[in-house]
Length: 178
Length: 178
Image 1 (cartoon, rainbow over the protein chains, first blue to last red):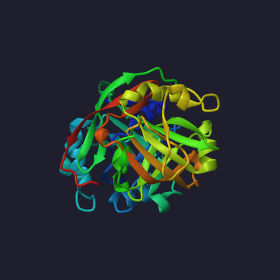
Image 2: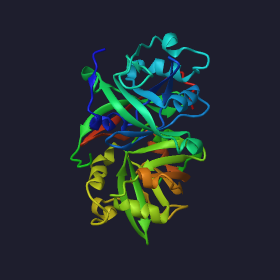
Image 3: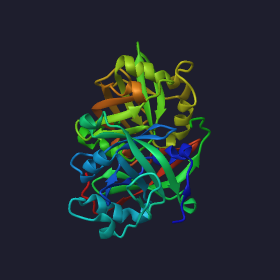
């Protein structure tokens, strides 16, 4: 893995554009992955993220029990695998093995990083008060990794029912917004 | 305005890709606009959206008091105006007048739609329990509008400090995810 540590102050720039991500969780050393698009930044630093993990998903119970996860950001080259991950359940499938994804030990949490993703955010659940109402977990990013050669990787963005927008060009505007 | 009603079941497909949006609010008939990127879907139907409106923003007090807003989705053609809206405060500037944006009466809420945006979501605040902790409001979309000629408009996605990713091509994959 050619990844380097990313300053926590820069995490929001990865998630704020709205990419589809892969959430890795684990229980008793057995990892799982789910595809996720319902997430938002809640705070810049320490980076807080709110995300919906449906209680219909196998990952819900793993996340609720372990209170740890990794948000892995795939680029368009992984799009077919991202869809396959989303089309099945960890109750029946070992998704790392089935889809040829490589688990790499995280530094702060038990669930593994997905090596093929260009960025990985190690997270702890810090607030579960909205889980009952909305399946909404608040995560704090405790460690972030990025492949410096792929920091402008083209992400994918879910439009629904098989349609994904692929990230286009980046333009610069005279914004004073962080 | 050439806009038509959009089924509420289709709203998530507009926001899930993560576009920058313009939030319109109003108090005593005086509207304001803010630029916003920290939002996520919370439920498909009725569509629930969670979003962060910082208590440093003028819009915070308007939203908290009126409990109504409109989420307006701009395309890249409006990018320069979107940045100008984000660079100033409604405390000092009438943003509709200053930036040549056209308010149009909404059907269900007091704040106006922004005519130049290709889609508009009329919203009511339905949960304020996370406002103190995270400035996080839960909105229900009660009416949605779209310009049918621009339903594939290219949105902009904030990467931080003036960098915006412009939505690229849409690809189709064999996903069973709604």
